[in-house]
Length: 305
Figure 1 (spheres, one colour):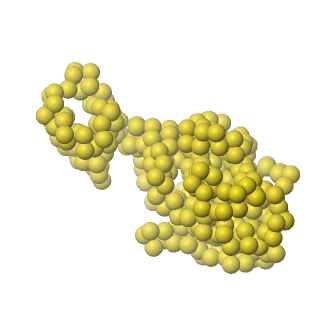
Figure 2 (cartoon, helix red, strand yellow):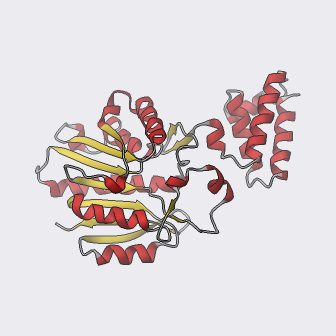
Figure 3 (cartoon, one colour):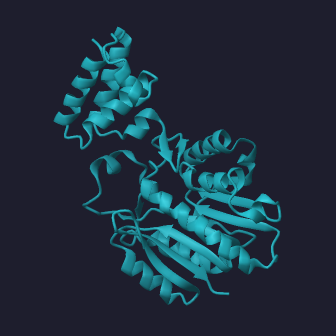
């Protein structure tokens, strides 16, 4: 069988399994196995495959047909122009979450103006680090591709604490940091801890998270997400609001004045979360930020000075 024949059979198989993107899925998986990019796949369209290559392609396409996310089968996912290792112990990074990175980067210059040299370090905290895509991307932008002059000039030292209850997730995040940040990886302190019991000895400039926010009985969650992605990172009690509420309380006590807290939320949670954060009387500039589809996606607030 040639590359073309295997690809066409794979696309047809995934169509019959009701895949929403059968061609893309087949191209990504087969090019991954053959160590080609997607363009290279078509350049070798008529190349015969070895029997073991055909068998490997068949096996991976069958797994995709069962609903296994493409990222778990290739063990990689792009985020903010970087390639992250992923497996079933971490959530698959989503494009929407890149907006959280943008919001933090956009806030930093104005925040620096308020610091007035009161601090020698710039402290970040991520609650629920998963693959590490958010913290590692921030470190890459601020340290390796600096766009904030005070960090570049060494006037402030960037430090990031990144927590996760899953030891497997911490292992993946550390591996990603070592690969992407290399010598700068030590700027991130990965901690295998339950955020509900975390008692830091310092306050933070920015606290951020893509927390579990799906209600345990949510009937709208996609089947492949529910079946394959880690439930600890997906579901929360109190109609999905438990972590958001508890971690905002944490922010009241552990965020520096004028520091920012930003969490990803569910698309139907904006009103309830906004009302709750306003009731704390500890934050200003509280707002809901929408994603690329115009849906509520983040809650952002600044600690009162």
